[in-house]
Image (tube, rainbow, N blue to C red; front, side):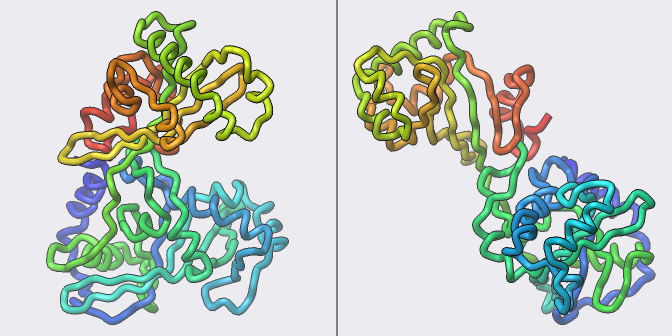
Length: 363
């Protein structure tokens, strides 16, 4: 069972019998506030809003391109200089804060749960443990950013998940600390009842975003100078042949004059790194070539899938993409999504890709 589902089950077991706090079966749009902590976000969901949201907003706050308000009533702007002053009092930088507060509106009507995102409050702590209020960012001010930027995901997440979709997945762990005018921080039973009803109750219908199973995989095919696998030598030699026959493709793809300066010399490929997009259908992984980076005379060049098609590479009567999918060569998995893979764990992660559920790849 998934880790975050286990955590939810533990909570249900611990509080399921405590129903003394009566809550309404339905309610109109009601302002609520969610509290997320960094430490409670689990790897299996693939992303961490507490870390990633401040990171994408912070540069825009410093330049003044994005307003940060004193609080959600938006009467007073904090400003970049005041934000920096507050950050200097904190024990950790703005982008490493442990807490995130999400302001939303919740509604349950005819057993259907709906919610809308209003904004975000960011806080820190000083060396005495006192809370520092950095301020509030209004969701409408960043909605285009949230809908177009992908949130960084680890190996267990999706490579194409926007911040907006992550927020609407409701797969992250949070505590409901305010419901309307009710302060629930000290009423653990009641906040849990509200949260259990809206997010988990089988009697309530809800439409949370479900992430597409997609991974971006980066791996290095080991050079024959450091690897004895004959297939590696065969592939390097074959790719070199096609590159030397189609040097103009390299010249068109490069902004460097270096390749023009060695135009009439034989080109030797030093290293090859492949980027692929993997999707899963009926539990079967499908691999699609995205790009290849290789070094010629210590200069990098990246060719997209379309540019590679100009080379018309054929190996053992196979197209390049089909040949790569068989993985007969020796390689090191370097990255899955935004997660760097240590070389000593490459084989383990690759086997997890092939055999495990994709939300359980991270070791």
